[in-house]
Amino acid sequence: MGTLRELGEFEVIRRLTAARDEAARALAPAGVVVDSGDDAAVLAPAPGMDLVVTTDALVAGAHFLPGWCPPRRAGGRLARANLSDLAAMAAVPRWALLSIGARAESAVEDLLEFQSGLAGALAAAGAALVGGNLTAVTGPEWYSLVLLGECPRGGAWRRAGARPGDLVAVTGHPGRAGAGARLARALDREARAPEWAPLIAAWTDPPLRVPLALALRASGAVTAAIDVSDGFAGDLAHLCEAGGLGAEVEEAAWPADEPLERAARALGAAPGALRFGPSDDYELLLALDPAGRPAAERAAAAAGVPLAVVGRFTAGPSRPALRARDGVVVPLGAGYDHFGS
Ligand SMILES: [Mg+2]
Image 1: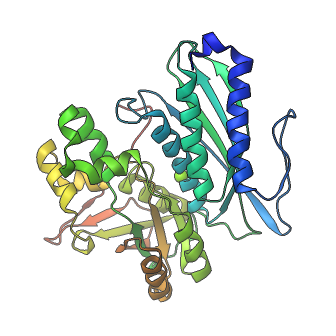
Image 2 (image 1 turned 180 degrees about the vertical axis):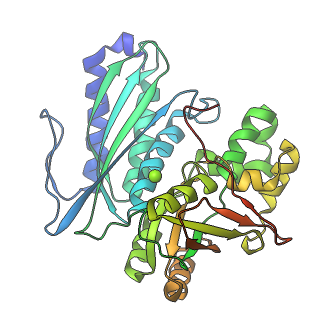
């Protein structure tokens, strides 16, 4: 198909737009009054709904290693990262805008593959690409998505809202994505062995938690929420800070995670450092009203998603703490600082 330089900007935009329109037509998204072909999209949120908006970007080399994340998978990953933010607000994903910073020598096919992976992951959650932008860069390539969703007026989950005594609950297997990324860097090709597949997949193909979030919203059990994008400890600290609370996490309440424990041995790391440390798992970290716990567990079981209740919020403000198996209480570590070491 050729490079961006060979095809030229307008031809590349024409191909991206045609592929995008084809994907959107298959989905027939509601609320799109005007999409591509004009200078801006015109969207009509449903009556009585709040608009919920997020954005996230991927930079090649920093957020994904091209050798591990071919374009289609990287596109899916960017979609899932944004969808995770809407899940954390209990919003229904609807419309998206994709901006690409691409190098002239890049293959146009790779851009189309990226967009296709992204549009497919959005469509699986009911959202469609309704516009975008292409710009030339000379440094690392990047992809930035703006995702819009809806939720009933005043019904979005917030980071603040938990009360002392509310339960700390988390979906999936926190720490696996960060462990997968570390394995890929440390073991290189050996990390492709089947034994590491659950950890590599957690990193390259993060889960979609929107359906569970919407079922949990209906249960009324959630008092505060965030998605795990920095790591369990860091994101729990964000919840505590927003709510003016503390939290105590019980090591003994965590289900065993055998792949994570194997990764800890291979990396020479403490299992807790992987489980609680930097990891963009895109799981849901929730505060639950104790009375709503059975309803929340039923919703998770119906969605086929593991949900572990691992602690309680306490009167604060204070940093989250971990009660180890031997009863000793220690601080729960820090999250991922993008501008730190
Ligand atoms: Mg988030």
